[in-house]
Length: 190
Picture (cartoon, rainbow, N blue to C red):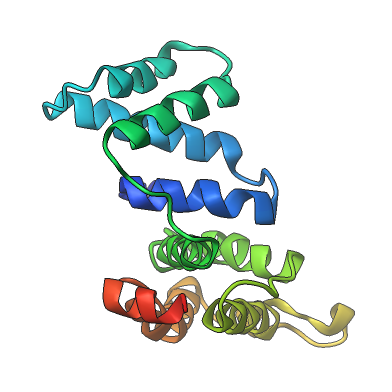
């Protein structure tokens, strides 16, 4: 079974662009491709914006020109009076997307890879909820996968794949639920 594709909205994508400079170009190409896919869908569903059609046409390019795409995205946002989200809100949306991927991971390896991101990077910025949730996910990674340099087996080694998936889902769902409601997101971004 293939991993599901996150159903990006324009606000999700704008949040990823705002958050990217804080994280570095970890998933830059993936995010730009998601923007192009979003633009294609909008055009197919009847949005007749010429600027959006140009963004959608970038799918034909072999190598993406990020500056050119950004220029057209800025133009589209200006034409439609759409504001970019704040850095704090963007961090929370990025976190929501990472949790969505963990909740929809097709197997235990996908969960391990998703949690590994939080063990590899130290996320101590943005709103307090973001920092606390990132630390929680970091601890969850070590709780499951830290084997004490081979001295004792990790918790994940004693669990089957379904047990790992359920273990992680049960611990992430309450946090994720807060991030999926706009009222909570607004409150947490303060």
